[in-house]
Length: 325
Image 1: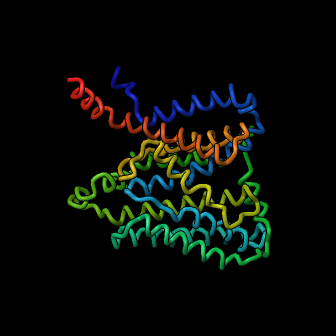
Image 2: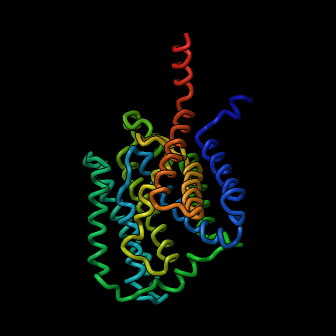
Image 3: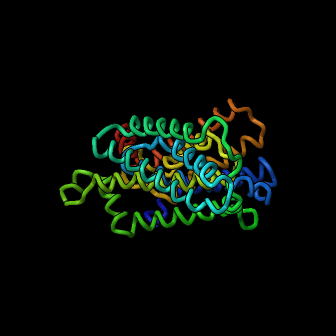
């Protein structure tokens, strides 16, 4: 029984989310679960869950993808410029977005895994190149000011105030969990991320699987950028900026180690919920930007410390026993 209910990072972050939502309803605002609050909050959660799951694939390899904002922003620029506001051109724009995302993922994967370069440096440089290309592609003043109506309708659709984006992101997290745990390719990705040398010795093409993680991540960022563009209606050159650090924090709050290894998309989802709800509460309370940063930093540092204690509780217990002796 003790082993069955032992604390895990997933249980810890889930408990934190339950506690935070209770505080949000009872202390911050009694309308937290109202239709208006849900219609504002759930799209933000959904987009962060999407990009955080993509980031989780890269973090599982021991890297961090800093090209995320550039990828999302370029996708937003494409769906703004390519269709010229017409629904008939949306399909072609989506296909172009997919091609761009695959190209970005391949460049990141080849430079990091093929040439052995540092992921932070590579993805930061690629992200800057992508942002530069986006500015050239979009121009100083966009000819079209709004995305096609169909995209806006898809991105703003929902059920009972709950955004369809959130429902889609939950489905993605479940599918990603199934892929990593039940599908051969996913299990091999976990293997090459947890023990790269051992995977190579068993004949698995570790570099190819790890390169594929960057491509999958870029495609997921593209979906997030597409839906974020539909949500705003008028995407600008800062479309992806809010999701860079928050996506990493969501993954780490879900118990992932930045050195690589197994990740949990479900726990990442809960981490994204925690980050978004916390920011929502602080805004409702009327805290200034500086105060919000202080509170977020303190809460997140405490949460990460607690998850680290849970992950290494056995070692900490042995160290405490040695000190007591």
